Image 1 (cartoon, rainbow, N blue to C red):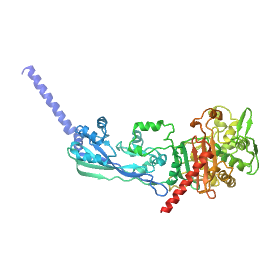
Image 2 (cartoon, rainbow, N blue to C red; image 1 turned 60 degrees about the vertical axis):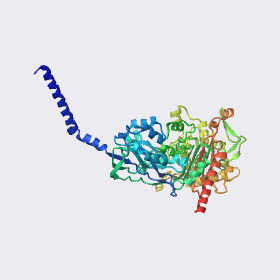
Image 3 (cartoon, rainbow, N blue to C red; image 1 turned 90 degrees about the vertical axis):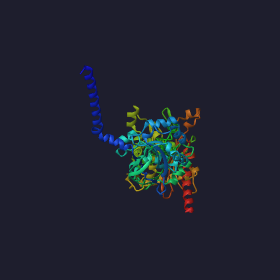
Image 4 (spheres, rainbow, N blue to C red; image 1 turned 120 degrees about the vertical axis):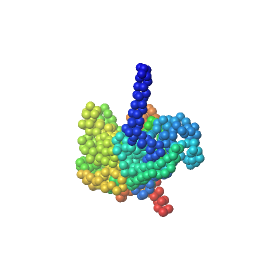
Length: 583
């Protein structure tokens, strides 16, 4: 044989050997792999989301619902056979968006690609009529989360969103689930997601060349998540939401003897249903960049100086230390005091005249509490403020802000300067470095009406109350409670304009200076108006509810926050009466 014949034979043999090796690889080495791929051509595995548990209020009213919804999906192996223009026209989406979804594919080569959710009945009918032109089409029935009270319960309940990569990494429960599954992202939906989520199901079906279902091979039905019952009274929650229309701030209400949270509102709010439907990037950026910060839960994360509501704590400290009696005049208020080159004014420029504790709280005399602060010193003010729970979370939620109660050590460490008597003056009337949350202030009212028993606020109905007996004299607390009734129900009280003839309530107003008076006189922007506080209890005789109201840049506590509290309580009571009549 000639050399070129040998070369030809050698090449043929080499090609033959390569073919044999390839056949061995395909038929023996990778048998399982290609068997699986062949199965996937005719078998489709569909994960079925489990219905989430329902969240109810204390009276059994559902705060969330599961409602049916329909979605259009395409099997990934048919994406190159679909009439893209037809599908885009039927579903009213752009061809570009549709092609982007096709390119993205799914986590698995046999997991259907979600094209559109919340289909209308018209869209479903049109898809079914043209099914032969849309191979691999699946119309899936789903359960969609709906929040019937919308913004009124948004910060409390939270919202759902698609599983993020970080959540899949951190939670074994989410492993191997499709990325379109919805899980809790904020609020109670997130906190109790493990209970509410349930167990997803799975359906294995055989399909034909067009992706149409031929038969069900196997099905594991989903298991519904656990239901949760809250301590919240949605009638009170709704009353607060309506009263806060146009305001920024928060309202918190507790059952004082147990710590049950009856209402927890933050305003402004947002509609959580938008997140379920799939929030657009533009709308999300609007929420994030909104100057009124609608995503912030002000009830537990908003930090404010407490203003004159803190005078309750200064008064408790002085009574506990035996430094004052309710009847004895301590100062003669002439409208302010001078300390060195500094002057500290009273809100009433002409002064209150001779003032005792009763009158000081009812009329909120600043000069009286400057003197109390001087007598007590910052050490004792700090002692009683922290004893009553300020400067630390209440224990309700891991998302709570602790706030701040300043003292000499704190100022030296953080501000790198000494503590002055003027700092004590400011602290004694709730100004200066102090920072509290509305939930903390509502909890202080609970301690007051409980006679010194501190409760941990909670929101799940069957929780066992946690109580701590503070070393406080119940008689001193009763003295303050009786005086606070006069703040609302006596003609000279700072909240006299909010007196109600439907329910008798008491409390303390507070007005927090945002900028100095000199600056305020020069400008008139809304964002430099004072914050308005009112913390209270009702009814006066036997309190069943304690609450805190904060209105950002609202002005005076007596003119704004106290009347708002009145509107909330009266709206709640009237609604309950109306429902009882109907029932």
